[in-house]
Image (cartoon, rainbow over all chains, first blue to last red; front, side):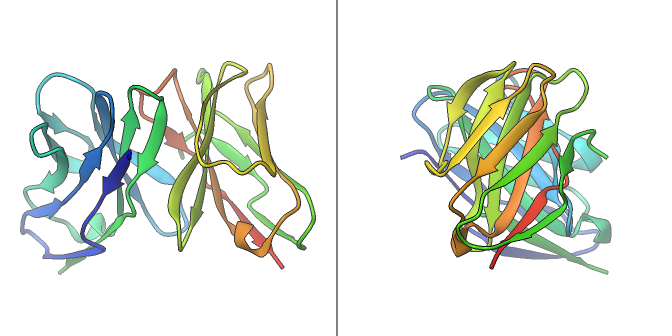
Length: 113
Length: 113
């Protein structure tokens, strides 16, 4: 079955340290992968996407993600976390065969000063 | 501000009632998506319209229906409401189909009492 898994409900990082938010997926066709961020009482904001090409994708606010086909993963990374990065992060995948979207359960990122 | 507008912001209604949620996409965007976000089920894709036609269907209940009008705005109709329908309903838009990032509106918070 098609799905997206974010294994960590919460990630805690100190400001200035690198951060990783994990995502794995399962789809029947070619995956189209996205990361979104949600701040309290706001809609989701697009961060980055992987459609094809280079496995390392760079996005907004210094975030990047690495597509790993063999591990079916698309982890979100940032070299140096900021307190303002604290928010809820969603991984999403579009199933290329059925044109449906699946979102992970979300990971709350807490960056402490 | 994503450029996607949703009305109303909040809606409180009783079980058994019917409501209509409205979404105006970003200027130039042809695709509209509807999502339901609840604490127990996370973010669920409901349905996608592209230029007035239904493009993809997700976990949308039969009591729910949507349409996209010639001016590209969309409405989500929820009928025979149940307590479990209480959630945040998001609309998103994109230029075309699934390869493109989605821009989310601020959401409509529906409370069914």
